[in-house]
Every structure is written in C-alpha cells, then in structure tokens.
Image 1 (tube, rainbow, N blue to C red):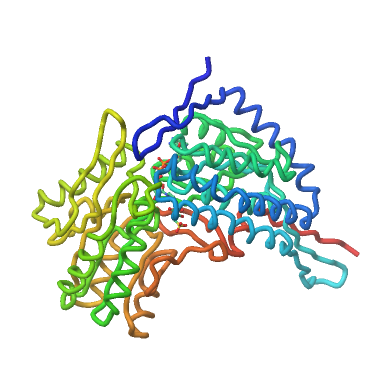
Image 2 (image 1 turned 90 degrees about the vertical axis):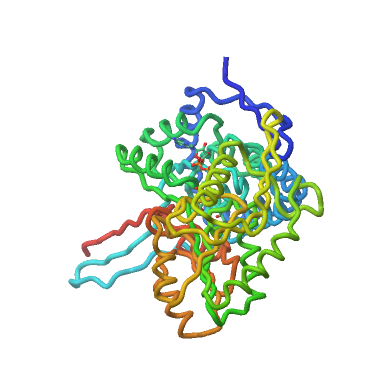
Length: 462
Ligand SMILES: NC(=O)c1ccc[n+]([C@@H]2O[C@H](COP(=O)([O-])OP(=O)(O)OC[C@H]3O[C@@H](n4cnc5c(N)ncnc54)[C@H](O)[C@@H]3O)[C@@H](O)[C@H]2O)c1
Ligand SMILES: O=C[C@H](O)CS(=O)(=O)O
C-alpha cells in the first residue's frame, strides 16, 4: 500500500489535501519516460519551445489567484506575497522563453588553413530537480524554465510540505501543450527520491534548492554518475548600516528583506551590523517599525507575517533566541510565540535582539525566522570582518550614501548577491546564487541557462 502524504495548512494545522507517494518503481518509470522524451523535445525548434513557454506563462497568469491562494494555503505566507511569488515565478518563464532563442554558438579562426572550427551548444539531457517549501512556485520555475528552454526534459520532487503548487503548475504546463513526459513531478520523501535521482544514469543533471547539508549530500551522491549539479543552498545574510546611511531607507529595506515569508528566505538578513554612533537611533526606528507588523493567517489582509512552516523550524528559532538570552542579550521587541503543538501551528513574533555576543548561535546558524540580532562596529574594515565571518556567501546588504565606502564594501563582501541601499535585489534577469557553503552555480540571467547546456566543437579538415 503506497504511503500517503498529508498536506497541512501551517497557519492552523488543518489538513488541506492527502496525496499518495509514488512507489520507487513508479519514480524510476517516470525518470525513464522523461529520459525517453528528451530526443523528441530537443528536436523542437528553439522558437517552438519558446512559444510553449510563453503559453505556459500566459496560462499561469490566467490562474494567478488560484495559485496564489494555493501557496498561502500550503506555505502560509500572506496572500499578497504569494501573488507576488506567482508573478516572480512567471518572470522566469518569460525570461527563458526569450533566452531559448539566444543560445548561440560561434566559429573559431583555425590555426591552420585546412581546418574549419565551429562551437555549438546542446541541451544536457534529463534534468532532475529537488525544491524547497519556502517558494514552491518560483524555485520550481527558476529551474524548469531554463531546462525546457535549453531543450532538456525535466522531473522535479517538490517539498513534502508544499507539493500542491508544483503539481498545479505542471498541470497547467501540460494543458498548453508541453509534453507530459517532458515535464514531470514525483512525490516521496527527499532521501528516497534523492537516492534514485543521483544514481540513475539517465539523469545528467541535479539541480537542488534547499539546505546546505542536503546539498552537500546530493553533490556526493551525484559524483558516482558524474552528474552536473547546481546547488542553491543556505544563507546567513549580513546587513551593514554605515554611519552616513539614510536611516529611514535602511529601516524600510531591512524590514522588507527580513520579514518577507516570516524570515524564511535564503537571502533573509540574519545579522544587523550597525555603526556604533547611530546604533541607538537606528535600533529605535527599527523596533518602532517591527512592532507595527501583524502576525497571523496569510489570508487575513492585514497580516504581514505568517506562520513558521513546521515544528522543526520553530524549535530552531526558539533555541537561537534562548541561547542569545542565556548569553546576556536583550530582546528589544517580540519574543512571543503563538503555538499549538496539538493542532500543529507555530507563529513567532517579529523579534529584535541587542547586546548580543558575536559567538551566539544566531550569529552563525541560519535562523529562517522573523528574528534579527543587532551588533555594532567602529570601522568599515571591522564590519566587513564580522560580515564575512560565516560559512555562507549568498546575499549581503549595506546602507551608505558614500560612493567610496560603497565600492569598498561591495568589493570586499564575500557574497554572490549584494544589495546596496536595496533590500530586494532578486530578479529573473539577474544571476542569483552564492559562494562558499551557499552553493554552486547561478539561476536567472543569461548565466542561468548555461548549466543546462553542453558545449561541443566541430573541427573539419578541408
Ligand atoms: N539558495 C537558494 O536559492 C535557496 C532558496 C530557498 C531555500 N534555500 C535553503 O533551503 C533551506 C530551507 O528549506 P528546507 O528546510 O526545505 O531545506 P531542506 O534541505 O530540508 O529540503 C529541501 C528539499 O530537499 C528535500 N530533501 C531533504 N532531505 C533530502 C535528502 N537527504 N536527499 C534528497 N532530498 C532531500 C526535501 O524533501 C525538500 O524537497 C534553507 O537552508 C534555505 O536557506 C535556499
Ligand atoms: O529563498 C530563496 C529565494 O531564492 C529568495 S528570492 O525570492 O529569490 O529573493
């Protein structure tokens, strides 16, 4: 009897839907049908693939409200954010529908007169993806769109917490003519699917978005069949607020970046590093703004911050707060929970922590919640040292009006994404990704289709 997966609403613990896991045999069968579909899908012209992607984007837009509500139901984020995620997810399809038509080769001047050399780009083959729950739409299309645009076929395992959005998006893709075998999903637990995906020879690439420990495991497992990998992993973003920063902009952008998705984003600020001379003024402005945020069910139009996805995530946040307090930190605001273990929902009040030592857990472990610690600095060099003291290198932010200081910071922060007076730097047209333990590869931008292509050259003797 196949195992059932229960999809619950994280805002109240209520059962939304019951799905049946695929058996391991069924997963292998789906992998093999997706591999078999590769030869016909790659034969489609780039313009036909682009047209199908544009039809998919149009269809998603026509169903924007339904998909947004599905995201809020299974992820918990406020509906306006969920609708924004639908728009963000579609923007990747829009972008790669165009990039499909710009996969260029080139000729290379021969080193001897009797040769002609051309370089071409070919689709890599069947791509297998594993995605997280925090952006169930965008993290899937950010992979499926470039893969299909390049001529690859694609199979994805969504997170157990949020399968419904991915299923619905793929149903819409099939409804506009993207072949069912070319774009598929499988349902089962991560370790089971990961083992099959990383070991099956028909899969040429693994693309993963999720935690760093799982990413490292998938990289190890993929080595046995020499698969290409793209890894979009954990983060621990610092925000540096310089002495000359526009404090209103800094507070506004910090709140935007920090409390989006209840802080459950990979680019969410995890540390505020503020110049000592403006720290008191900045922190007061920040606390005043944070205390206006309303926590609750994402369908409530007044709610700004939804629930934590599950008990595991809640416990990690609570432990980080308790560790900070045990080390003498001050809770400037927040530090409240609304939980019901029996029903299965977990809310954390937006929390600002001050007087915190640099070796506190929250200063080094990804929080993935609506909590932020504030530490101070004297010189920019000290701020950069604190900011770079992390195994992660995904996103970093800073606020200064000084051109030279901004250049210094942008050139010395070891992060793949830098926001300068900008708390929302992401976009489909920009290469998103990190350094160090934050992963390998980029998604979005012109760079984002390269991981789905093999480079080949032809040398002709004439
Ligand atoms: N860099 C990015 O773009 C990005 C985006 C979103 C989330 N994330 C990161 O993801 C993490 C939060 O998401 P999460 O808690 O769902 O991460 P997670 O790693 O626990 O799960 C992500 C996906 O991996 C699957 N999985 C879990 N264990 C697995 C295994 N052993 N083998 C194969 N698959 C497995 C899960 O089922 C899920 O589908 C955070 O660290 C966050 O920073 C990164
Ligand atoms: O959490 C991960 C997302 O990639 C963040 S963003 O919406 O792309 O900025």
